[in-house]
Image (tube, rainbow, N blue to C red):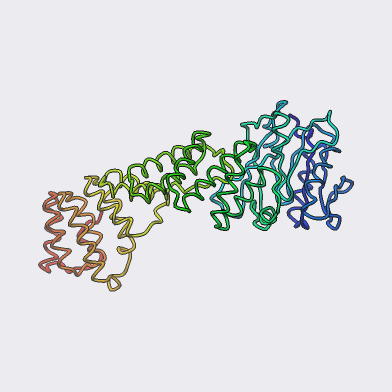
Length: 456
């Protein structure tokens, strides 16, 4: 498809910032026609473009439909003033008759742990006059248009970059406060509003009403089911929540919320294997994009941390170490000393010598860098205790390395020298052991670092 054979419907709700003005100027070159849907008191940097005026947000949908009826092209793309789309995104789409295209809204500033979808690239029925492409009020909804014209929602996604919030609670509040509800999508948005404001009984009713007539598009239906399952969980209706989550997964497995909801319920019930399996399934699904609007997700590192916790409850040290090690790696090593300490202990218990030494080095790297007078006795005894675990496993070479590093911090410590001497002897490093013995007998003064001992 030639991207320029699209009419851009550009919604201008507020004055454009300087960057938004430049963005609109750049966008205008991508399209054969640009229609600016705006209030009459707002200025646009584009000269000679047709404006479709509206007075308040409640009039926005009417203005959008008027714009669709004067559009010169067979396709329209809807963008708001804080959104932009790359030329490459349009170039890769080859629209087929009878299809419409969803957009993934990327870079939203609110609730970054969500996935936002919206239908934005739509074909027009040019043989029909005064067609109503959009319904609703402050949230333009093309669902009825798509369903009544038997349009398929394409599996091909376009990405729209958005700077502002997707979910403005004030917009949703205006829908929630309406006395009459005109569509399933309005029930859906009411459910989202009540869920976001933690009014769960009202949200439950709205989500159930939204799904009664089977008029929600799939990514909204998935969202409604997930929203309902989450609401039921918060109302402590756990069995019903599990059933709804199952229905959502069966409709489309390419999403995250059902697994996370199942995990939380099984965790609450102490059903640890089921909780673990739910997180495992979540990580599998995370390999592909979600197909549910407003889907929420957990960072993989956090999922592995929870799986490590469950593995410990199940007394499975091997899996606990595996997941905690991944938690450490995915966080780039920026974890608490408590986590590093657990990793060291697990590695020792599981006979992973290299890993044990790696985490012991990391755990005490800051300690080793400190000046001797700054090292607390508690810290000193802690590292001695850790090294003794290496010796219990007869990892004498690893113990030697750590004693050598410790000697650099506390060269006056007789305890370090004695233990180092024993470790050197057990590892067969007799020449170095003799040099350490001389320091112990004060035949060589203990200085830092000692010139006669070759440090590794």
